[in-house]
Length: 233
Image 1: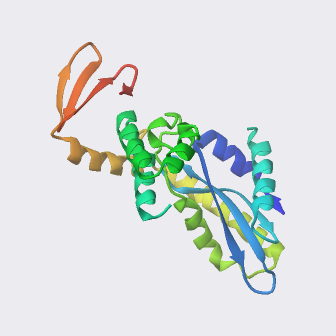
Image 2: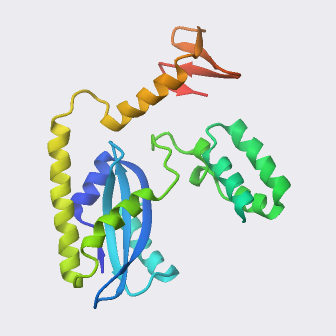
Image 3: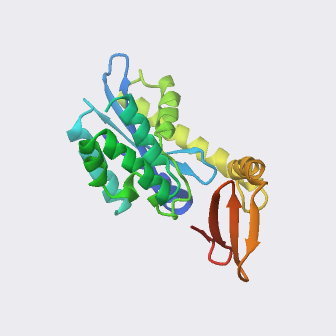
C-alpha cells in the first residue's frame, strides 16, 4: 500500500527544498513487513514526511515500485576509499573536487572510473543545483522519521496508516502556528548557521572591484562575489 497525501504533496512542492531521502524499517508484532518512507526538508531544515508505503519485503522491486509512483506524483571500498569518497562528495569547489578525484584515481582506478561515470550533479556538492539551497549529504531525515514511527510499528496496517496520517496532520498545523510567529525572511536554522559562519569568516579581507563585485580573501583562498547576481565562484 502506497500513500502520498495531497496536502503533503502540495506542501512539498510549494514550500520544501527539492531533495528527498528514502529509507525502510521493519514492522513488528503480528503484522510483519517493511515500511518504506520518503522524507524531505522544509525551509527550516526540519523533516518533512512526504510519502510512505507498506510492502512485504524491502528489495529492488519494491523500491522501484515506490519510486515510480513517487515520480508520477511529482511529475517528475574499504575505509580509505570511503574517506576519499566523502572528501570528493563534500567538496565545495570544483578545484577541491578535482584534487580529491586525482587522489581517488591513484588509490583505485575502477573506483575513479565508476564515480566519473555518474553525473556530478547527482552526488557531488560542488555541482548541486543552487535551486536546492542545501548541502544535505546524508539520510538522517528518514532515520529521524523512522524513530518517530517506533510508537506505532507494531499496530495493524490500517491503524498504522491512520497514526501516520494524524501525526502529519497535527505536525503540519503545529508548524503553521510556529511559522505565524516568526518575523523576517530568515528561518531560525538559517540564522543559527549564519551566526556560526559569521564567527568563522569575520577575518575575511574584502576588496571592491565593481559596483556590486568584491574579491574576498580568506587564508590563502580567494573568491569573486557579485551581490547583484548573488553569485560566488
